[in-house]
Image (cartoon, helix red, strand yellow):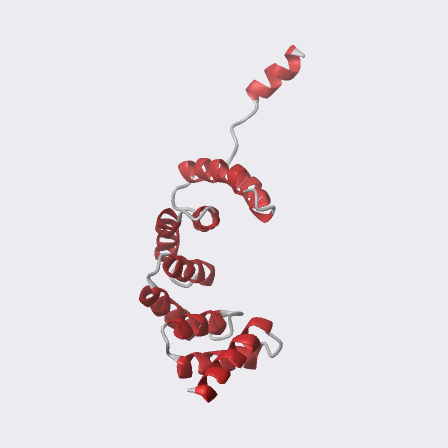
Length: 168
């Protein structure tokens, strides 16, 4: 028993990479409460790690702590302006905070930079539809469906918007 305890106490401290891997495991299981302290430890070791910032933002978003999630997604987007995961999460967080204009601006830039990114045109269409920009939303949905013709949510939203257009 004492040998086990001595070995346990002498083990090397966890690396940021090991902490991130364990946190990702918990995030995949939607066990955010176990992932969060691991991500906090990982960020204490490597504050500018892009992956840790994104995962921390996701964990906080899932907890509906949108203001805190926003800080991490903004940091991640500043670290790598070409990271579509950071940008899409940033847009989703702006939307959750009711900052639709900011979400729309991020989505428009992301769709221009990454026109073949799955769901980017769909997410843009959703934001445009929320703003009441029906024709632009329909155009974005058509771009999404050109890339993914069986996208069920894009098909459904297109049906809804086309139905509204016909009744207007």
